[in-house]
Length: 252
Ligand code: ADP
Ligand code: MG
Image (cartoon, rainbow, N blue to C red; front, side, top):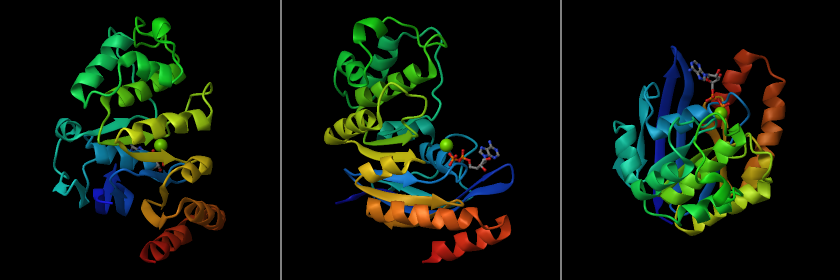
């Protein structure tokens, strides 16, 4: 399969500290690729850097999308190329109704299913939600589901889903995976960012992120096994040694 996303030696610093310390990753067009890593390993930082958010410009390395170097491109340019990010904690948009938000997503993207269908697929009855305002009166979980519906409506070329289950207690992991498989069947390549091994198992391939580097990419079960074994090991090490283990593993 052709490569859609390629990340080479990506270094991202926040407040003078390197959070991503040389991420290498290749994502094939059409796959659901899980990025599995414990809390604080840099998963959201990677998501933000891929989307090109300000403050996440790489200090080193590059990002290629469909063969094009997008490292210096703005969020808007990346969105136009078909990249979208569903945040770990979605924002609310005072004044915009759910219908308006989803219509904007749909027209701005590659016109996925009708907005009613997108809402229904994430378990939100359209007639109860289309007229609601996208503000704080929607729960965090509802906003998160509206955002997933927006990704469906957008039908992007690449969807970066940062912990898509976080805050959603009414949908099971299988339900959420079914939503993800649905967008994937319509041609969206998915980068599924998670700390849950059950999610990583349900992807096509997985990569393990630890200490700001991808330590292993491949078959999901293998990567999950590595994550469990390696992280057990690294949790018991003092911080300075942890750095070294990360570097050694990264060179494998
Ligand atoms: P994850 O999503 O894997 O839990 P993050 O990418 O959110 O990890 O964070 C990775 C590391 O970067 C953490 O140690 C976190 O404390 C740090 N970090 C996150 N955001 C900032 C920030 N704005 N400024 C400084 N450090 C940050
Ligand atoms: Mg995160």
